[in-house]
Amino acid sequence: MKSQTIQEGKIQLKVPKGYKLDSKMPVFYNPIQVLNRDISILLLKSIDITERTLRVLDLLAASGARGLRIKKEVKKCDVTLNDYSKEACKLIKYNAKLNKVKVKTECKPANVLLSELNTWDYIDLDPFGTPVPFLDDAIKRISPHGIIGITATDTSALCGAAVKACLRKYGSKPLRNEFMHETAVRILIKKVQEVAAQYDTALTPIFSHSSNHYVRVYFQKANSAKKADEILKHHGYILYCPKCCYRKTSTNLLSESNKCKCNGKLEPIGPVWLGKLWDRALVKKMVQNINTEAEKKGKTITSIQTNKLIREIYEESAIPTVGFYDIHTLAKKNKWKQVPKMQDIFNKTKGTRTHFRLTGIRTKKINV
Ligand SMILES: C[S@@+](CC[C@H](N)C(=O)[O-])C[C@H]1O[C@@H](n2cnc3c(N)ncnc32)[C@H](O)[C@@H]1O
Image 1: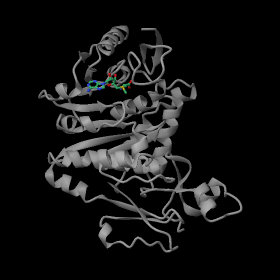
Image 2 (image 1 turned 135 degrees about the vertical axis):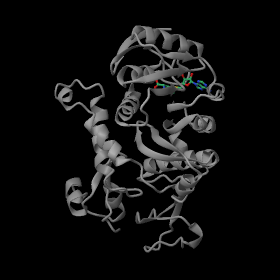
Image 3 (image 1 turned 45 degrees about the horizontal axis):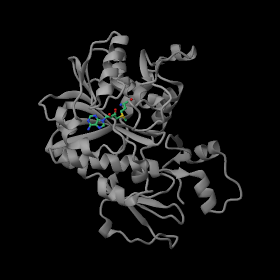
Image 4 (image 1 turned 120 degrees about the horizontal axis):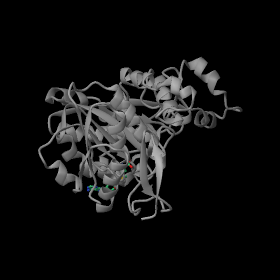
C-alpha cells in the first residue's frame, strides 16, 4: 500500500496515499472527516457519564484515526478498535505503536463483535452509507446512560433525491427543499429511536450536525420503556408548502388539510423527530472546552472549522425550531427585487444563522 504519515489532532497516522477516496481504498481515510472526529473528541471531553474509566468501541475503525485520537486526547478511557478488513487491523496496530498508546484491536464483522456480551459507554458507528444494518446490535451494547455516535452518508436517500431508498431504509418520506439537511438529521433520529424503543430503550439526541455530505447524531441512552414512549410522542410530520415556504408540524396527519393558505398544496415530510437536536448545556461545555488561548496562536487540537461549527451550533440551539428559512428561497418565491442583508433579517426577526445552510435563518418570528 502506498502510504504517508500525517498529523491529526494529537496523533500521527500512517494512511494510504494517492488512492481515489472511496470504499475501495486499501484502508479508508478521509482527511475532510477530521471535523467529524474532532467533534466526537470534544463531546466526550465535555460529557459526564461515568465515574469509572470510559469503555469506548470504535466499531468501524479503518485506519484507527478516531479510536486512537480518543485514547490519546480524552482522559481515562479503554478503547477497542474493530474493523473486519485485515489490512485495516494491521494499520490500526501500526498506528497504535506509532503513538505509543495501548488499545485493543479486533478484526471481526461488526455484528459478530456486537453479539458478544460486552457493554460500552461510547460506541462509534461510522459506516459507508447507511448505519441501519448495525443499529439493532449496537443499541443493545450501549451501557445505561452511555452514548452512541452515528454517521449516515446516504444523503441522497435522507435528503430526498432517492425517495424510495429513504422509505425502504428509514420508513420516512423526505423532501428536497431548503431545510432538507435538517430533515435528513430528523429522519435518522426517528429511525434510530424506533429501533431502540423495541428494546424498551430511549435514545435522546444530544448533538447533531450535517457537514460535507454526511449527517451525524449523538444519542444518550436511558433504559426505560416509559421514556421510550415519551420519545415516540415526538415523532410526527412537517407539512410544507413549496409555493410559499409555509410550514407547520403535526403528530396526526389525518386531522390535517393538505391545502395551504396560499392555495398551494402542503407536502407531508416524515415521520421525523420533532424534538430538540442539541443538549444546549452540553454544547456550551463543548464551546468552553475549545482552548481559546491555543486558538489565538492557531494551535488548538480541534480544527478552525470545528471550533467555528461548534460556536455556530451553540447560537442556533437557542432557537429550537423545526426547520428554518432560506433568504434566497424567500426572495425568489415572494419576487422581492433585492435579497435583504442577513444581518438586517437577524435584527428584525431575532433570528440566528443555522449551520445547515449558509443563507438560512432560524427564527420563530417570520410569518410567510
Ligand atoms: C467509513 S470507514 C470508517 C472510517 C473511520 N471511522 C474514520 O474515522 O476514519 C468504514 C470502515 O468499516 C469497515 N467495515 C465495513 N463493514 C464492516 C463490517 N460489517 N464489520 C466490520 N467492519 C466493517 C470498512 O472496512 C471500513 O474500514
